[in-house]
Structure formats: structure tokens, C-alpha cells
Length: 363
Image (tube, rainbow, N blue to C red; front, side):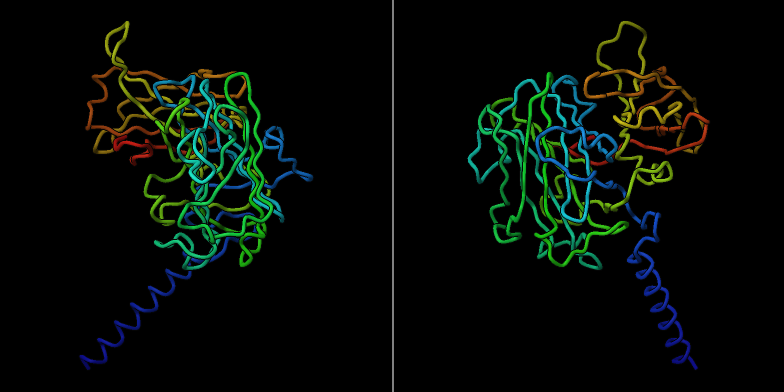
């Protein structure tokens, strides 16, 4: 009898584990986001032109990065993502007064550019610990030295990862930085079949050099762990368009949030909170509320943000609020950003990103 009960428990454990695995691996139903999806790629318009002009990305899903850097005139950037049956497309808009990439054609990460992490393997292999067929780590840039000269290359130990079929990069300068387009055809991943609601994985890392060697890097989804393993990438779903219902799952990368205490202030000490507004969907937001919560979950205060423009031409916007330092003791409270639409309906909740996303550890 004891042995029978043991086998019954083993069977129950096996069934529960199997069901959980099937749920996690299950594809999304049409029009819904799969479990664990953190980002999107929206449908590209017909006849995409890779010319460095990001007009086609007007309605694309975006992950803003580096908005909280000390140099808000030369670091903020926006990554955009789209797809069609031919290719995956990425767009990058930067604020950057010192544009250059002095690296040779095989080491593009040593200057202004993008480290691109991409995984199409699906099933149990998607976001695996190890790299392999169907996953690639590569680089693209809009520059050669200080001139516009689009280039791309593969990671040195992955030169056979993909054939490079039909890859295109194009760039152009803007008044305050640059715009770069990247096209990665699905032909380089023959085992993947692009379709609405399919799930892949990626991370996008932006590198700045200020005219010399690399001095800054930031990750849209993961951290420097993305260099070592695809497990650090995020699940990305191919969708037709960005729907309000998707904001809840994707708000953390659409609208990063941070708070800090400025080191010099004209008034008695205040904490400043900032939440990034998505560049092409800010008009869908009615208000942003910064909620302070103590360690027992009690609300300490709520502060409505006001819109601050970092750069008008590129729609670089943040919602900002301040509150007294005595209201939020360091290490003894949490911050929550709550985003509402124009009718007062909640779109998303966002918390500070507790992971190192740059060249040095810390958040």
C-alpha cells in the first residue's frame, strides 16, 4: 500500500509538471499575448524602404532607453520593432552630438552602434542557456569613423550562425542625432515561420562612444547577461498592431520608471520621479500617477506627473513628479507608476527596473 501511494504521488507530480510545461509553451490564441511576453513587433507597412527614415515606424512598438542618463541631450534613444512575412525590422532614433564608429568591420561594438541578440528557435530551445542554430548575436551601426556608412557584422565566434541573406542597414543624421534602420530577413532562419502571434526572443543593446572607444551601453530588455546567454532575452510576440490591452504586459519596457534625489536643489530636499512616455502613443495617456508604498503595502502618497519634453523633434517625453524626501525613506519604500488612459481606465503599472542594464553594476 505504501509503495502504491508513492507511485500515485509520482504520477500526480509528473502530470502537474507536464501540464505546467505545456501551459508555458502553449502558443498564443489569436489576438492574445502568450504567457511571459514582454514586448511586441507590430506589422510593417507594405513596401518597406530601408533608407534611414523612420516614418514607417510611426505606429511601431517602442522601447525607450537611457532617458535617465545624466546627459539627457546626448544619451536617450528609442528602439522600434516591426515585422512582415519577409523580415524583422528594427529602427533606432538617438540623441547624440558626437556620432562615430572607428572600429574595423569585424568589431563594430567598439563605437556607436547596436548589439543585437535574436532567437527564433521556439519550443524548449527558445531563450535557452546556450547559443545555437536559429539564434544569433550580431552588430549594426550607421557609421564608419565619423561619416554615415551603414555596416553590420556577426559576433566573431558566430560567423556561421546565419548566412547574412538580404540584411540591410541604412542611416541618416537628424538635427540632434541620427536615425538607423535594420532589416533582418527570415530567410536567415529557415526553421522559423513568421505569422501573427508567433513568439521569438530578442534584446537590443545601444552602445555610445562619444567619438572614441565605447563609453556607454544599455539594454532594452535584459542586462549584460544577454552577451553570454539567450536566456536573458525577452519574449517578443508578432502582432498586427499595438492594442491598449497589450500595455499591461509590456508597460515595463514601453515606459521605464526611475526615482532619485538630485544632488543640488534650490528647495528643501525633494525626490524626483520620472516615467518615460511612449513617443508615438503619448496621446493615449490621460495621466500618470506616482504611488509611494511602504514595506507593509500601505500607500504613503500619490503624485500626478506632468509632461516634460527632453527633445521635441523626436518626441522624447517623460512624466515627472516630486515629493518630500522625508515621505520616502531610502530602502524603506517602493515606487509604483500607474498609467491611465483619457477615460481614467488603467493601462499599465510600472516599477523601477531592479537590474543592471549598463557597463557598471547598480540601479
